Length: 383
Image (cartoon, rainbow, N blue to C red; front, side):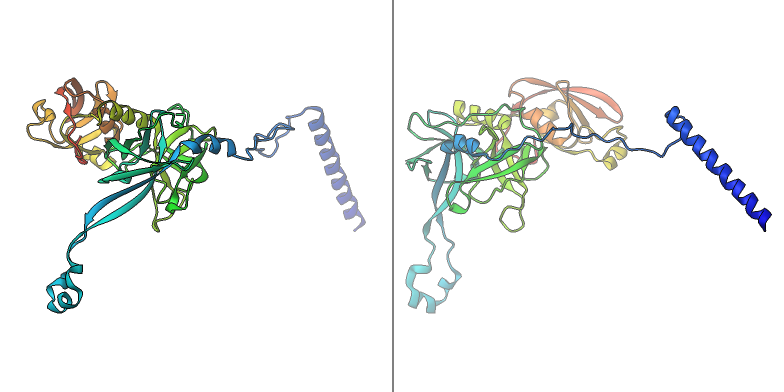
């Protein structure tokens, strides 16, 4: 037994000597011994702190004088009550249940864009209105006239006959980024001018089925009924969009709101002020996105582009030889990403000019020269 313990103690001593030697070697020559995997992370430098914004009061004060409440009214004819066919009701209630016109009011918001009295709002706020009143932040209420509207982007321009209006400042079209703080200003539910804050959740939202031309800013700033037509401004109080719609199952804000970006706002506004309407190009085709299944079915190598689903007989594209089943991949050498991109590219063309469409038909690329016409009003399925 004594011999066994002697051997055991010698082995333990030898292991201790080896471990001590390895530790000394690792200390003298760093990196010679294998180590466990380490994760390298980035850390804020000592003393570095994120910038904190404690108030957006300056941005709100800058933009609020330009924000207006819009009150509209129109006469609508109430449907005739079927009870009028009952002699009993006619005897006791008289003609009161007959069809008769009634005045219906609507509420929205808007923003002054010119010292000459031009005001931007949504088309759906003033649609079919025969009377429009605009209430300003200083308490003034003025009658407004409709300069023109564009249902396909849901924008409208009003004007009040008053000079020296407090016009808002437009932000640069390319200045907005996902994560930027934004403020939505308007008159939700008629409670009065209200400011809500959020961030830009996404840019370039489309395929929502809200309007024909979609390129929305998505934000979680609370937007509610009555905010329509009001401004979305950045942290400096500059206009970045016009609030137009929300995604909601209850009618109230769920943190998903959409605004029309200033790039589209400026383009539509300038045309309406200049001519009273918006002129867009049109070639008479119906298109759809190219899904992986469609690409495989038509032998396409990519899902980029737009599939020609239909061609208007006798229209510009038909005369140029475009056929259903063609994949349209470029307009005047500008690549087409999807059907929404194609809508915008065609709309930007001037009626009367000739556009070159690059197509893929049965696996081969070809070009078609199309003479662009003016886009008819409210053709949602065509371009």
